[in-house]
Image (cartoon, rainbow, N blue to C red; front, side, top):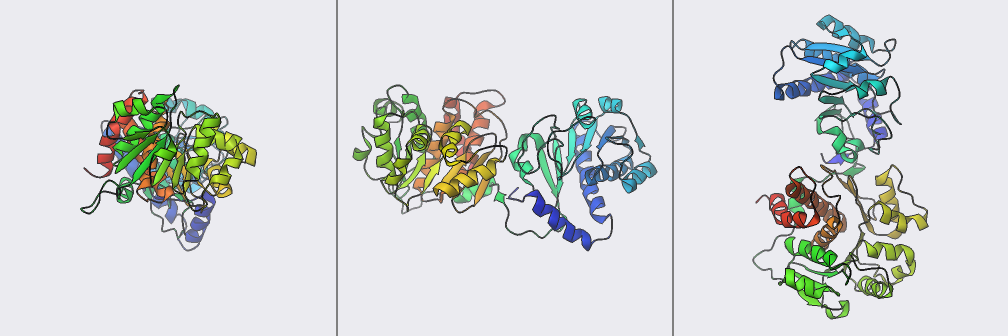
Length: 475
């Protein structure tokens, strides 16, 4: 998945293709894709012949796609039953095709014995939670699900879930990837695209893949030394929270920064864990850096304000996290110290976002991409909004989303690791949006490697970061 387009743009592009395509041709192409991926899923779990597939059929084109897919499945010796949301409003041609192939209409109780469910309840125009009887059908599902275009009950443009919704093993989408596929990846499962020949201009946002992350990651060449490879400074931690400094510095070290400098009250703890790091007590004594990480565990008192002001005035790229975001929200005059030519990346979670964006009249709400873009434009910064899917919005509107593949990173200290990783990438000269996307990708992968299917604390995530980076770089 790379480019992602809002649903209204996709529907308009589909309308243009439909106008020059024989009636029903696109639906049959879509249905063929659904059927092929349904067959593949059946093969994974014991074979095809004699298996029982239940179609959950809505009243729109998604229902028609499901019915046509059912007809194709029936021809492969699969038992197919269609359970309609509204029996009086079924897609006529799709229903006729299913019946010709030997499929039949069923009742909600048929869902209970399905080997596979095809979700064709709602499509891209649906908004809001599912209501009865659709919600009742979804509640009965126990079998793996192939979703037609998107899992029903999930908002197609925001990925929000406000009530009953489908969780799919596989989602087969058509024409282009839509926001739901990145913003609710955990609901969509594997996403497969069926090409419809749509003509679309620049996407609304993009999703980096491993190859793109690897291409952005700066590796040392024969003429490089520790200074040309990127020097990152970390101003973090306090007497109460030295661990934040240790985690942020450790991530910067793991991210192949040429040199890491630490400035702050946790210098002794940092030296004990990372002897290769140059430590000082203050930002002013740290020496020249190419980027700063500021905020994790730093506190919000007068001394922390002074540190943040000094970092913003340094003229280098800045990753401002945690307490630095809280300070910027409470003391907007701190922005006066900023070098307008230097990149600033804010890395808030939802509560921190509210602290800095709320006074500006920007609310997070269900549309996290729009909220991050609004804050980035308003402050002239890059915003990396952490959450179930990480959104990286640049001040020029360019936006990346890193889909969540698990929830293992929802743990104390995880954000400190992300900040150190991002700071190291900024120090190599990568543009802040790409740096944010690459850091988020490697961070999620480190979480997966550390967790291996179970909850995990931040220290194992940090320990797994070198392996995650080796994977990124293809090593």
